[in-house]
Length: 613
Image 1: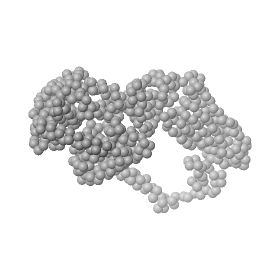
Image 2 (image 1 turned 180 degrees about the horizontal axis):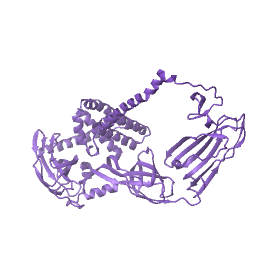
Image 3 (image 1 turned 90 degrees about the vertical axis):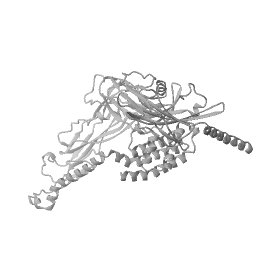
Image 4 (image 1 turned 180 degrees about the vertical axis):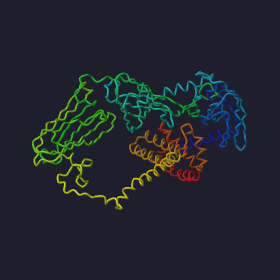
């Protein structure tokens, strides 16, 4: 068995050696080509630099004067073996957007291959007036990809807006979930546009859903929930929820330009490119029915399923002593429409404005919790009093009717002597007020003696401290605001300072997924952590998150080449694990340690370079 394995390894080694030797015997070449020599101003030009039978780590590209780089360089490799002859090519492509009409020259590029310098020939390109929404002669779309490729992307990458219901009553909650479906490799998707939700009151929900695999139209898709909201329609009729828009880069395998058909080697040695892709979710129409007629008296617009609980902290008291009536409304529904019930207490009571305690949670099923109102009442005269019955009316959409809930009738027995109304006591000192709970105060029954302090207080140090204190606080707040405004203006610095903290937070979440043995979520979080850290630390946008650009920026910031290669290798391994788990090298433990160490190794030089700048 061991002898056979040794023999096989020897054969493979000799084969690779022969292939390498064959490549060195064949001539090296470095050429440039373009997808078209005449294009419209609103078209995208593809430029290819191809090295045949060799490799180079030192390529000097032209400046592309007259064009803006919107993608690239993207690297790809292809290999052919025909009649024992081996040929290999490495292609580096750019996507260029012309800036103006005219004739431009794609200058020569140089590359060192096996110690020898090769130079491409310049290429002239003519840019004409922009075409009015017409496809280019090569069948390409505005982002440089062919129509066939874009059609394939549309089938494999899309957004769906899912509603818990599309026919509701006014005020009834609707949960909207925006879900991304993909069967392709993507990088750094982000929202570019969100709807205004006209006609709705909106509550945002936190999204913690892990990635899942779902079957849709008979195909397996990897899904991610990217946004979830609760909508409460504020008017009846047909309301439209506009789409949200997402932007990302999709990696696709493209056909080898030198062959009209793929060979069986294309899947292994095929060419890949990252295609910028902007797409939107489907719009939704919501049918909102008006609330039916016959609204009860006191109905404030509450829609849902509620309970009413009313309690009294005591049923017997003395004159001048406070009593608290608690009105608690709990359940699920549009709590924002609730208001304190208007209660008519006996005229022999002093009644204070109710305090409110709101404990409402936002869930995927809507708003759930309770709101309580505490009414503080102080009886002035002895007797037996019937307190008002509390009524609360709401509309139950599940039953399709109004419901009124009523409390029991409470009787309060008051003893003691008749007392003056607290409204007439205008000279009460602060010491005569006693705290109830946290935010309600009532009058002490024993007022004590009143004293006229006179005007001597004006001459005390305490008076001047209190007098000058507001000016000092104003000056302090102004200084704090100036510092905060300065920090907010330094967006790049703020992103850079928070980069490591955000990356470690994502890595902590990845550790949770690792412990749950959720490989897809784990590798997805690692990729997000690294790309997010690089974007924040280098202060670059989505369009610049390209590998060659990242390499150059990291090198400019003093990152060692070995660390840069570790970063790229780790991204490759994670992205490979996301879409081909069996091909991933090492386990999640090793990947997690590599990611942690990578962030640590890059932080010090990047921070030092930022301070020097």
